[in-house]
Image 1 (tube, rainbow, N blue to C red):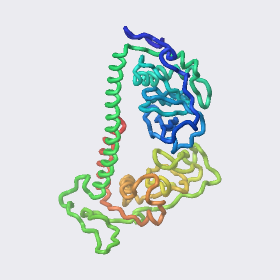
Image 2 (image 1 turned 90 degrees about the horizontal axis):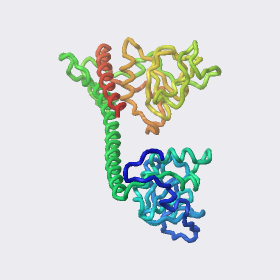
Image 3 (image 1 turned 30 degrees about the vertical axis):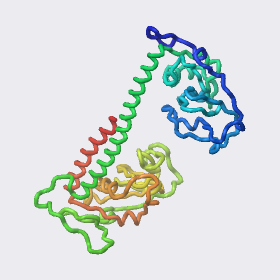
Image 4 (image 1 turned 30 degrees about the horizontal axis):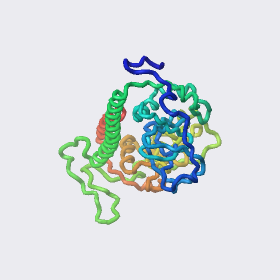
Length: 384
């Protein structure tokens, strides 16, 4: 007994309560074209939600199937840790890796499903399952599995409480997803306000807008900037803008005395690939921006490194632009994402981009305000 059962409950063997392992086999030729054909891939792991309902006419069925009835508990004996357990809502035919369990009214089907998906039952199947790559629960072990059985009325109450709890959990998860989207939108809005000079307080004398637009239809200026600001091309405020190169003949997967930057993998996003280590070509603090695949992700590199071919490095002129301000400006100007509508970024493309540039002192104030807001938003996201 995995635990002491409450008063009125009894420990049973699963095989004493249902037809575990005793299935009705059906040849595919005997199955109607409009019949429900259930495979493991149709069930979502852990949640056991039905992802799709496929008819025989839409699925190539050549192997023997188990027939199941409405109300049967459909238990996957293959890789039980995936937790694929479903209650059938109509008659159908499933892969032989799924066992239809008929509890004959002694156990509420939904209660049985919850027990079979419980950590207690998972622990049991982990101990006695066989097979390395594709472990499964044997018939005898399944029949001997311990099963806590309360009275029928209590089973119904348990199902009701569990379903209410899971509905609340789903609602919380949906709210978390919505809140993550709000955090992303708030960050984007913060950068938008910063670019327009509306994030940090300005001296009253400098609050007027400077009309930087031209009458030409192809004006590079997206909006009016505050007085004292300028629209500048990236190349005007940078000491160097260059693309990374091919892998050098000598490079290291670890930090070296020559270069303190280790090699990473998989793009710039989430502390990814920043460059090779042993032959640094960028020696001053710079901004690295991903130019292919994961377009637009940026990071500031303080130490020398050798960027790979998919990266572009921008070394700012510190007498003109604050490196953090430029980094945030790039995040505002270039949409981030995989499979972006921009196939790739190029050095000429980066050099020609315009950013709104305030005086250095104001850049610093804007950076401080952005980081204060981002720290709050990051704290919200991390605590979800």
